[in-house]
Amino acid sequence: MENHYDVAVIGAGVVGNAIARELSKYAVSVAVLEKELDVAMGTSSRNSGVIHSGIHYKPGTLRARLNVEGNALMAGLCQDLKVKIDYIGKLTVAQDEEEVKSLYALKDQGEANGVPGLEILDPGAMEKIQPNVGGIRALHSPSTGIICPYSLTIALAENARANGCRFYLGHEVTSIQKTGDRFDIRAGNKSFSARVLINSTGLYSDHVARMLGIGDYRIYPCRGEYLILDKRLKGILNVLVYPAPHHGKAGLGIHLTNTVSGNILIGPSNEYREDPEDYACTADIMAQLRREGHVLLPELKTTDFIRSFSGLRAKQTPPEIGGFKDFVIESREDVKGLINLIGIESPGLTSSPAIALMVRDMVERLLPLVPKKEFNGTRPGMTGHFYELSDEEKADLVAKDPDYGEVVCRCEQITKKRSWTPSRTPWAQGPSTASNTGPGP
Image 1: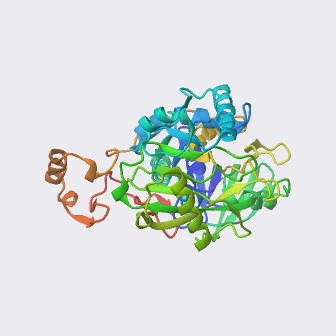
Image 2: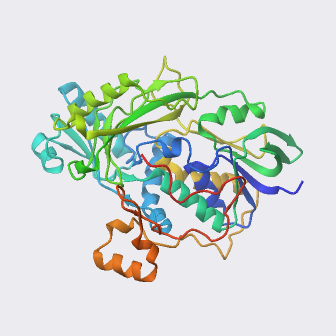
């Protein structure tokens, strides 16, 4: 068998790629197996793009610890990878006195988790941060941020590939067997062998675990739908605006979220589905999102809503229970060499760099990890987009490369030359290579 690796990572979402990049710092061979034809095609491109502060999860849980650690790591990671990130803060808004009590409980929980700068605001202070916001009190969390989730996922993958990881896109894993101290894997039309196997398949993580006889887990897909607001509203939302939490809900409630691209999102809803790829958008939910968006920001108009999309959470809790269950990140003793990541829903995006460090430590207990002197953790290019530059900066780039002056998308002001230059060599094995664009909203 020619495809022998030290480590095989199944799943090229944000967590799988963060793990691959972390392992690319060491002298081990790493393969990433992905059933889709590109990275970030599932949950990693279908979410709010929020860098959470860490207020929402019970102290002492993996979710809480990895959220806060990941938040702290994200700024430096994005600087190295040339990914735009903006810590704009968040208001969690209460509409009545009962919800105000939940804000104080949330503040206490966040402070126990080590979240900095939390403060309960009255309507006057709320108005200074976000004009026209509805509600009688709000919890302000200044360390909440926004990011393009698929840009981060792609950047992690490209940097991992630049440092030696091999990517096999369009290679769905169909069977896994443990033979001695190695895993024999069938993916696409190829056979692979690995000493360590990392299951980072999100909505399919229970399915992959069952391939190795582990029936401990079940994933319940939970769909969240979003509405996208027109860019002409850019600037009316200074911070993220969330409702006060309610016990037992499958998500954090419908909220208003800025994006780094200049749009505003309303959502997500939460609805359990049987199909882990049921990305439908429905008329009833669209109407609900409009109503609840008006509650949080009353000045919204019907003409402000331009598009919709949906994503699915990998929940471990069934619909009759709802709420959240802690992440499962385990190195199995009964299947030596298997590292399982189960139920990595929100705040999985925020937690991804911290999860990568945790998994690296697990791998190190299974394999020797010797640092590579030649590791380069930075990505060439600039952060952000050409259209965000000053006229002088644009002119300088056009003088260096005329493709910067050719606009290929007038609405989004995208030029033929992207904001950064990908590798000249094909970086993925399989029928496609990862793009540097990602899906649009």
